[in-house]
Length: 218
Image (tube, rainbow, N blue to C red; front, side):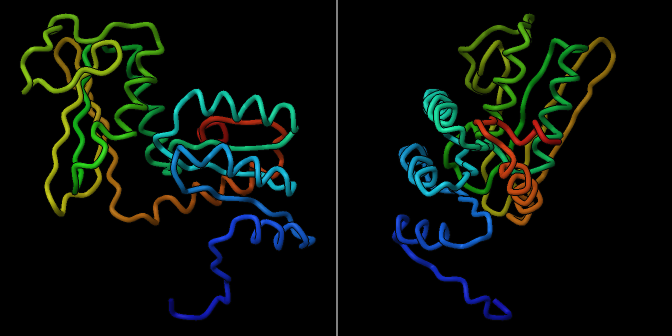
């Protein structure tokens, strides 16, 4: 970094939580770890009176349910954010709005590596659209042609392209009689997470329960 910030880096969670809890300023734990450790991390933070932001895209819904019950008993605020990208959230909201007008939809995404495909973004969009009670792509229900992509949820096809150097990109294509409607979001730098993270920190300090999704505050 260009200038020294004198921020301690410690690999003992209990030690750092204890140190921060002694400060008069409000402390917020930001958890960027993995699904297996989220529950214990939130419990430790709660024990020190600190609220948590959980950014773990592959977190399981049963873990979220367990965290929600725990937060309810402890009256402690936690924000679980599948994404912190404002653009990604706006893409998801636009896709939900479009789904009320179109019954044909496919997701095309590109990534620089093949880890965890379909991506968390594609899975989230498919889940959101499937929860609306509509069956998509009724005219092409086949699943035996691999080139047609993987089917998620209620008939939503996902095509994942992987090439080194590609930006992280997600496009949702809708079609109706005589038209195609496409919405796209590109991530070119991890900096895109910072505005969402700052918003999450400002909001979680006022919570007394678990909230799922940063979109609740946008």
